[in-house]
Length: 290
Image 1 (cartoon, rainbow, N blue to C red):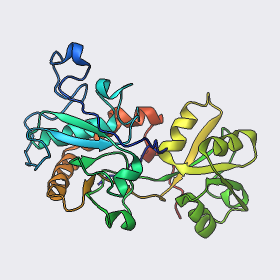
Image 2 (image 1 turned 30 degrees about the vertical axis):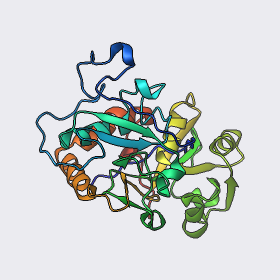
Image 3 (image 1 turned 180 degrees about the horizontal axis):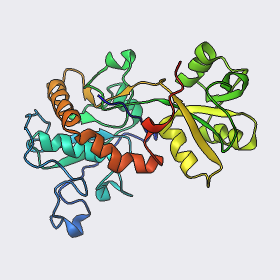
Image 4 (image 1 turned 90 degrees about the vertical axis):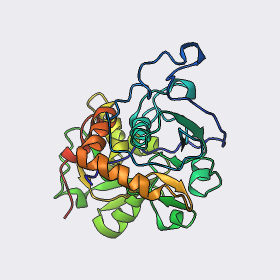
C-alpha cells in the first residue's frame, strides 16, 4: 500500500450516540432530496461486493470522535456530507452493498479502550499499536503517519546540518524518541502543545519542529509564507479502521481496502479530500532518512 499520512490533534468529547442517515446528506427539511446516496462522496459504480455483517441491516454504523471537519465535513452531524474519512466510510459501505451510513459519536478514549462498541467500525486516523490490539481489532492500514520538518521560510536548514540545530518536539511523541535516540541534534526542546511548538519556530526559539506531516503541512500552508516543511522522516505509524474485538468484518474490510488500493480509489480519495487541506502531497517532500 502506498503510504500517506494523518490529521493529528485529538478532539475528545463525551461519549454520545447521534445517528445520521447519509442518504439525506442534510437535515430533515431536505431528507431524501439529495441525488447522491453518500453526500458529495463519489463512490465506485458496480464494485465487487464483499458482504458485511452489520449492526443494522442494510446500513453501516461508523464511529468517530467528532467534530473533525477535515475528516468529516460539516458543522453538525446532520450536515456531514464529505471529508476524507467520511468518503472512505462511504466507499467501504458501497463495496459492502450498503446504501446508508449511521454515524456514532464517541470519545477517542472510548474507541481505543473498547468502552464503546455499538458500531461496525471506527475511522478516525487511529494508530495501530500492540497495546490497543489487546482491546480492539484493526483492519489493514489505509494510511501511515510520517514526520515533517517545519522551519521558518528560507532558514537554510537541511538534512546535512539539522544535527547542529535546536529541534522542538511534543512531550510524549514519537518524534521525541526519534530526536533523542536517532537524530541527536545539538539540542532538543520539548513542548506541551502544537501552538507553543509552532510559535517557537516563528519566534526563532528553535530551528525546526518535528511533528506529523499532516499537522505541520497545513500549518505551513496557512502561515502566509512564513513557514515551510523542508523534509520528512519515515517516523510514525499505521492508521486503520478499528473494529470491536472479535468482529466478523475484519477480513471483509481487509478485502475492500485491498481492492481500493489496487484500483486507485484509496489514493483518489486522499488526493481529492486530504491533500488540498495539507497544501500538497506529503510524498513530494524530500526524504531525509539515512
